Image (cartoon, rainbow, N blue to C red; front, side, top):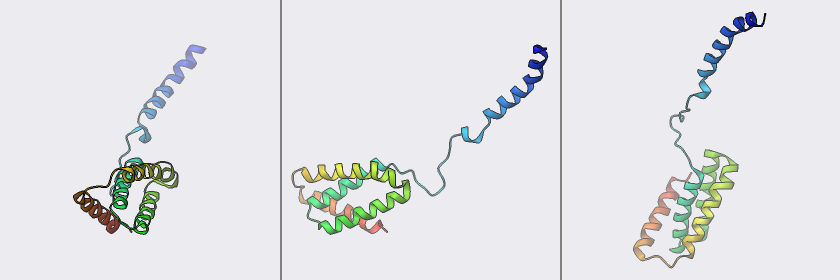
Amino acid sequence: MRMRAALCLAPLLWSASAAAQERPQDKPQELPQGRPLVIPQAEGERHGKVFGRALACGVPRERVDAAITAGRTRMQAAVGRALTDERYLLSLDDAMRLETSLPAPSPAACEKGIAAFERFEKTAP
């Protein structure tokens, strides 16, 4: 009796096994077209270097604060509030703190830093 039940269930188990192997959620997900991958820590570090260098080169704090707010808004739209607060802002703060604690940059470095800051301001919404 048990043998007959096992023989009857075998085809069902094989079909269930085959169906489980072909589930679409097991396939690697592709990024939606037009949306680049955003890594909050990397973006925060990159923006923090630009903002910190701008502060060290004499850009008014109000302009830098406005750029930080724009960057935060953009990051929240890309990855959500939790990742923005836990990863982006912490990396941004660390990078800014490091840049402003270093000795004053050379005039050539300041030109590059201010140009990078102005490029960021132009791309901000």
